[in-house]
Image 1 (cartoon, rainbow, N blue to C red):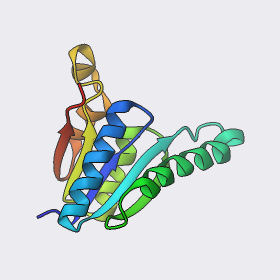
Image 2: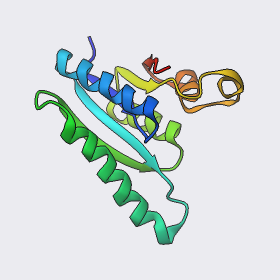
Image 3: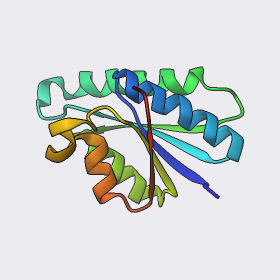
Image 4: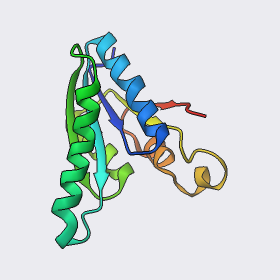
Length: 131
C-alpha cells in the first residue's frame, strides 16, 4: 500500500513519536522511509554547522531503527513544513507522517507545521497523536 514514506522530525517529543511510528510502519510494510529535518540556513557563517548538527540528528534516528527498515535521511535548509513537502514531492511519497504538536487552538488556524503539511500535501498524511 505505502512504498515511500516521509516523516518530519525535530527535537520535539511529538516529532520523535512520529518517527517511532513511521519506522515501525515502514518496517512492517517493507517501505522506504525518508526521515527529514530542517535547519536554519539563513546565516551563511553558521549554515555548515547547522547542517552538520541536523544531519547528525536524523542519522541518530536511523541508527536506532531496526535493521529491517530501509531508511534514508535528509537535512534541508529552511522551513520544516516546506522541507517535508519538498521531500514528499521529490520522492513521489505515498504517505507523510508528522506529530500533532501545534494542532491545538490558534496554532491550528495560523499554520503549524502539521497544519501546513495537511493543507499542501501531495499524498496522504498521518498525524500521530502524542498528547
